[in-house]
Image (cartoon, rainbow, N blue to C red; front, side, top):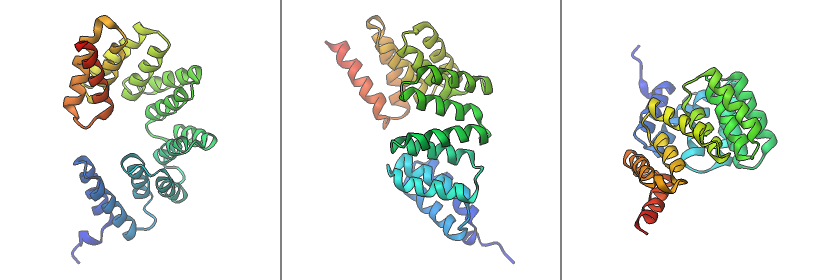
Length: 229
């Protein structure tokens, strides 16, 4: 009997991944919904759909539904807990956010990322001491964990620990010359009047990599206005 991919939920899951790589978010969503239609207990599809909706469709309540469904099917999905924690943080349900972000650290195969995500959440809440502790834990699990390196650098820059922060931003760039590493370093350099041209260089690189990166574009416009004054 020939295999029909049109009846295979994995086929649609793979299509969703391809569409995400192409930034075709609506098509990715349709493919994930089809995968779930064909396999109603497809926990991973619920997880990815929940995260896609949160990140690209700005609908935290809908995202919450799919992520909670994923966890009800497969309670040990570490990434689903991490994503759900971020959804609850967005909804200002901090007790639930804390629970799921910590649960993600216990369950995730990528503990560096899970620790860095929790650390960044703590930093947003201005709990800098605990945030630093979890950034350091993230780097113990994975010394090259880019989110930990970048966001720890930002935390240190807010605390005026500029030499330590710059070392981390430069390490991030050495690991990946991506839009986020360029943007974070450019943001850091903006605070020094004598380094605004350097800031412009890195912010411009971030925007060249991704012209739709609004936060980097806003910072670039700011530095250009300052240089033209």
